[in-house]
Structure formats: structure tokens, C-alpha cells
Image 1: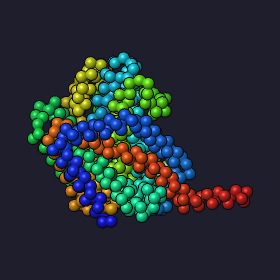
Image 2 (image 1 turned 90 degrees about the horizontal axis):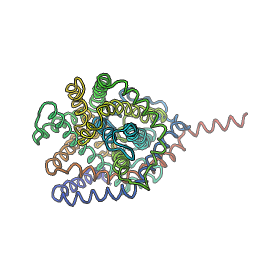
Image 3 (image 1 turned 135 degrees about the horizontal axis):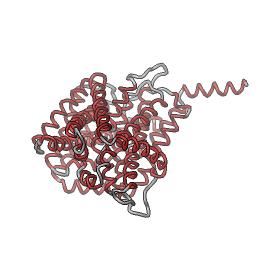
Image 4 (image 1 turned 90 degrees about the vertical axis):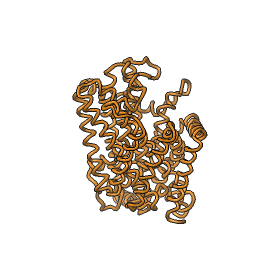
Length: 504
């Protein structure tokens, strides 16, 4: 099979999807919505079981005897410091979503809770608990499972940096080089491009809305084109510069800006309420983690669970090929235990702090403002900040942070797409990265300018297409387990233990 087959077929698939969206928007929207409704309505239980299994597997493998295995040769050392490593994985995996939903989701749950009175104390606790749950261990465990399998196969077994490589222990290299492996890699490319194009477009809308609220900048296609154009140039440039000089630098800067906004809001906002919210929310999260993980509400109205939890789980799974591939790429030299703790715990705690700060700051304003702000998630954060001292300044910082988060997510995706379509090369060509960078922004602009629902349709389609990755990730756990059981480091340790028993 040709080396660039995944590249060519992926472009054809994307061209067909875009053409369908442009020339048959009603049928495309109906098909995408129908597919997602069918999957979320009939397989919500599968999403919940799969995501919970990722959490259990990640915790188990970190504390098992396999936790000492290095993602690389036995004498390898990490390529990046802990700070830079965390900055890159956090910026790629969650970043923009935190800014978009940091105030909007808690306010939405506070104004429209499940089975409790809106605006009540119970509604406030429900809002924080569910926000913690949706942005806590589960999404990062999903990324962890896929990234861990990829990193092990890449750096321990010297296999290509492709999603299909994780199945080599189960199916063998010959089968993976055939149609099965190519299909998995093509689906991964589509999920990555569609997910990033959607985020780029929605982010451009949010930036435009923020600038309109703050400075009266008009909300029109000209401004959207300018925003997307500027961001595209920067993220392609930083992707071309590579991980060390471009992506790492932007991620470090991004975390600094996020920290400034977070600390400023903590100080200016209701500080004591925020601190109490974090403490109480953490306790609620830990206390209800198991129950929430399997909550489908079979005897009640499951629309809330389908609309929030199942939607999030499907979205995280659709993003897993991109985020998992990038996290694997930057994790060489770390042990499995260090990897799991870093990917699972650090971003989860950061997310909890983020939602505590902006969730409590919004809830403190009361249910009427919460209901009004939550009607438009793209402006919810700006509405909340406008009610506090220095609100305009903080909102301006938030707009800058939106831009940097988009750049760090998009340059990571651009680099990963280069890997996926270069036979898993850890250093894809600049031309390849440039082409994929332009495709992402071009796809976003085409859908934004052609249809009011174009981006929403693409998002729904990408989530529906990402469904197979729930199966891919489950089998990826079995494949990884099969591989590490035969790892020389583990077998050598087992031999030593058996010998010592016989001697004693």
C-alpha cells in the first residue's frame, strides 16, 4: 500500500463531506442529527461504561507492576520538563473548552438543574458537581488510554505514530498495514479535522462576540475572516517551527495568561465563596463519582443526561485520536505511572480550580443573571465579568486567552495531522503541516459563511463518526495489556522474584 494512501483518501472524504454540507445542507443536517440521536439514544450506556472503564484501567495500570515501564528505552529521559509537558497537554486537550464553558456550564446547570429547584442551594451544588464530573477524570482517562498505548508502541516498540499501531499486538503488523489499519487512521484524520474546524469556527464567533460586547466591534463576516486569518497564520507558523520552538513556547505563554486571568478573578470575585466552592465541590465529586459515572436515568427523563454527559463523552472520544496522538508524541521517557498521574491528576485539578473560580463567580450573581447569561454560552463569561470591578480588563484578557488557546489547540492538531498522513513520522514535513493547517481553517470558513448551522452540523457529524473510537479505545486497552505482559522489563522482574522465592 502506498505511503500516502491515508492522506489522499482523507482529503477525498473531507471533500465529499464539505460538498454535501454546501450543496445539500438540509439532508446533511438531517443525517448528522439522525446518526447522533440514534447513537446517543441507544448507546448512552456504552459511552458511560467505556469512559468508566478508561478511568479504572488508568488507575490500575499506574499502581500495577507495569507502572515502572518506561515509554521508551530503559535509559531514556523525558524530552520536556514537567511544567512544559503539562502546559502542552493541557493546552491541547482542554484549553479552549474551559474558557468557553467555565462560566456557561455551571450557570446553565444552576438555572436549569435536574430534579431540584432552579437557583436553590441544591442547584448550586448540582451545578458545580456536574461541571467537575464532565471535566474531571473521565475525559483525561480517555486521552490517557489512547495516548499510553500509542506512546508504548512508538517509543518502546519503535512502531509508527499512528492510531492503527496500537492494534499490532492483537492483529499483527500485516493486518494493520491493510484495510483495517488504513480505515482506523482515515477515521482519525476526519475526527481531528472536523473537531478542530468546528472549534476554530465556534471560537472565532466567541472572540467576535467578546470584542462586540467590549468595544463595539461589529459581528459580521469581515471580522470573522480577519480573526480566522490571523489565528491561522500564527498556528501554522508555530506548527512549522516544531514542538520545541513553536508549540511549546505558545503553550507556556498560554498557561501564564490563563493563570493571570484565574488569579485576578479569584481576587476580584467572591474569594471566600470560591475557596469554599472548590472544597465542597471536590468532596461532592469524590463522594458521588461512582454513582454519576453510571447514571443513565432509565426511569426518568434521560434528555438531560443525553444532552450533557453522553454528549460530552462522545465529544471527548471524538477528540481522543488527536489529543492522544499529541500527548503520546510529547511523553517519551516517562514511566507509565508518571504518565498516568501527569495526564490524569494535574489537568483534572486544574479544571476543578477553573470551574470553582468562574462557576462561583457567576452563581454569586443570582439565578436571573445566570439564566440570562447561559442563553448564549459564547458570551456568558463576558456577562459575568462585566458585573465585577475591572470587568472590561478581565474580559480583554479572556479574549486574548481565547486566541492563545485556539492557537495551541490548532497547532497541535496541525502537527498531529502531519504525523497521521506521513506514516506516523514524529517530525512531519512543513509542507504537510501547512496544507493541513489551511484545510482546517478553510473548512471552518466554508461552513461558517455558507450556512448558519454549518459548524453545528460538522460538530454533530464528527461526534457521530467518532463513535467507532469508543470501540477502538476499549480494544486498545486489551492490546496494550497483551503487549506489556511480554515486556522484557516485567519478565525480568518476574524471573528475579521467582528465583528469590526458590532461594528463600
